[in-house]
Image (cartoon, rainbow, N blue to C red):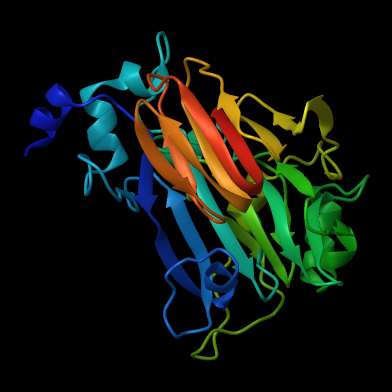
Length: 333
C-alpha cells in the first residue's frame, strides 16, 4: 500500500520509531542494559536517536500502517494533523536522543539561529536540554563560562592548555535537568546517561578535546574560530533547572523548562491518567515504570526507554499505569 493510500484510510495516531544506534569511542552498554535498546556485543554505544526528522539521519516508523516511512513523509501528507491548526514547520523541529557517556565528551558549542546562517543558511541553530538518568558519583556537567570570562581570556587559557579553569561545572545526579541554550560552551562529563531534547540540528563546533588522540594517534579536528564566533560570552554560568511542582492526586507534574524551542514536563504517576489534547504534537519519553497508551481504540506499550510521538489530531488518549511511571512530556515551541 502506498503512503497516499494509507493516508486516505488511516487516522494519524501515535507513532513509534526504530532508534538509530550510534557507536562512539566514549560510548558504553547502558543504552542496552538500562534502556533496553537492541545494541550489539560491542561495548561502545554512545547514542540512540529516538525520534529524528534530520534529513541526513531520519528515524523510520516502527509499526502500524506507516511502518518504514519517515516522519517527513507522513507529515507531508497532512501537516495540520501533526502540528495542529496554525502551526507548520518545514522539518519536525525536535530531535530526541539518549546518550551514554562513559568518557568526557569534547568541549563544544552549537550556534544559535542568528549565527547559523553565517555558516549554513539551510540549517537551524541548536539549543538542547538534558535530563540525567544515571551518573557516577564523580560525574560532572560543564555548562557555560565562569563569570567574567571573555573571549580574550578564554583564548589565552586555551592556548596555554588551561581551558578547564574557565568553565562553570558541577556534579550531577539522576533526576537533574539542565538547559543548554545555543551559544553555550558545554561538555557532558564521564559516567553520565541522559535523555536529550534538542532542536533538529547536528551542527557542533569543538573547541577542545582534552588532548585526546583518535585510533590512528591523531587529534580529532577542532573548529576553534567557528566556536569563538558562536559562543555567547554574555551568558556566563548555566546552572541546573529548578522544577516547579504540581500535585494532582497521585500524579506529580514537574514543569522543568519552557523556552521558545520546547517545553518539558516530567510526570510521576502511580495511577492511570488522561493525556490532555493540546492541539499540538506531544512527545512521551518513558524513564521508569511500565504501562500503555490507549488512543482511539489502539494501545501502545510504554516501557523504560520508549519514545512515542502523539500528533495533535490524536484524541481520547489515556495512560494506563501498570507500575509507577516517570515520563517526560515534550512539546515543540
